[in-house]
Image 1 (cartoon, rainbow, N blue to C red):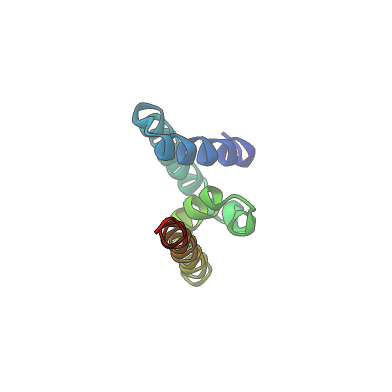
Image 2 (image 1 turned 45 degrees about the horizontal axis):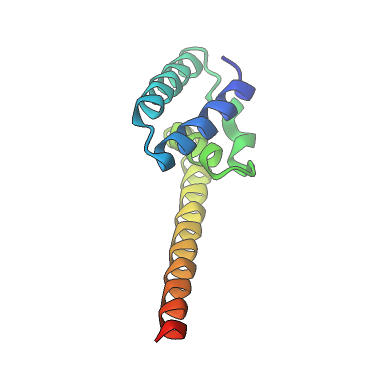
Length: 105
């Protein structure tokens, strides 16, 4: 597997999880973990560093997760940024529901 395939797999896993396709998500998880061990064995985990800035959040998430032991600061920053994104998205969703309920009252 190369980083291009890793990107595709991260996105596929995220989409599968979001849509409840857990068999596909589980298969992707197994392949991602295999890729992690392959990179680790070859001393190539740092090849994921550029992916911490990828436009897709699932790619940033898995890259950060895999880099936690080797590039802790950068990985943690990416995970914190993703957490803030989730909070903001949830807040916007909540306000949208509240606004809709208010208009319908």
